[in-house]
Length: 569
Image (cartoon, rainbow, N blue to C red; front, side):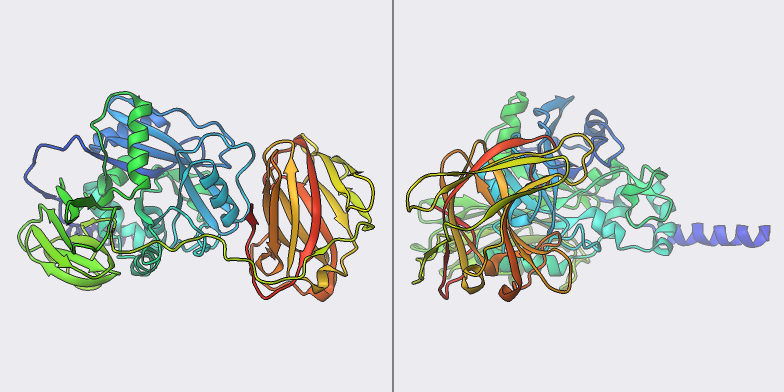
């Protein structure tokens, strides 16, 4: 038995050495530009499910030659983010990764919001935009439904074209065990060697950028945590190894961000410069585990106007695009228009003139990396040539017969045993009254606290397409508009969350735009089975112990062929 074990171990060692990924190509060093910051985005620390402190992570980034790290620990963004700070020469920027019903949304450049950010992805995206943050749809090719992004029609700012954690999780145990020896010898190279080109994600990105700018980032999604108990999610495993290490992931690939000014040494100023560049798509990805250092540029000119990746140019004078990279002999630069290859040059420079609109991006490929499945060494963000982003402005309202909700509707308060609420009708005369709805959610360990304003007068809703009303609140918050249905299942609900603030807002909720509560699933409402209309405050967006007042007036329904999402005036 001992001989057999030794033979197997020897065979494993020999196979590992024979298939050991080649060392990263060491390219001639050049003077690094102070206007290009290299860094890692989507990193987890001990503040959530990572294993390193911010200082330890920054030290690992420094050893990998990075300038900045963006931490995105899991949360609802209600935690006050740590201010940007330098640890040695590495700048740490604090963000958060928010769980929604449609996947995870990584956010940076966001202050503390007035309430929890959670629920449907479209609501989180709306809140992040309102609060001035920059959000990225995370791990779109994850094998887990709870992690994978699914809300592709929403106006998110960016998306991850590559996620290192998702790539690793695709491997089975039998695939993973043999590479441990290779990882010990060449950690960064071993990581990159297991990456496969995420063509479906790139196709999705190209489709989206044909309609509007979308920034693509490569995500480290680094935890330095490999579970050993065989659970579905290694991050939930209490027994783990610190693999792959932060330094290995940071050395495998990096973001190259083109900033407008050299670092000042002031953390807040330098962080603002990096976040601004990311928002505007001035960023490329380099697979450092294949070759390093990279010296890449991509720009375009039209008459006296010029731009770089992430920018846009008109077509009045035609456009000249130029990209360059320090590719070793045998490599190539590939120019893609709307996701299709239009030119490939086996040189360090590519030029292309056009008088036709399109979205252009560049991939630099190393020797031996060719064909549709080639993993890029460098991947740029696009330059938008003669392309106008789709105007998201509201469509003119279609003809409809607006009907006030019955003033005689009997409204009641529902709440869990520990929460409280009151309802007051404000107003006199024939005009429909304003409803003043006060809530106080239970604190402490109360189970699922909620307070709701409810009516079972719903005959009018069964023949309507939209619900309209004016809403304001004592402070910014979210209210869940819900339809409760009768039928085979108990307490089936369709929901749509709306934003309220001290200033009155006119809101229209399309019944066709409501989704199944708890799942975010898209399914039509069976209007014949509508049993109740509810305005609910719960802990999806509020916190236990929260208290406030909401005023609702001008409640009515509309009919018509137009289907609109929540809108405000």
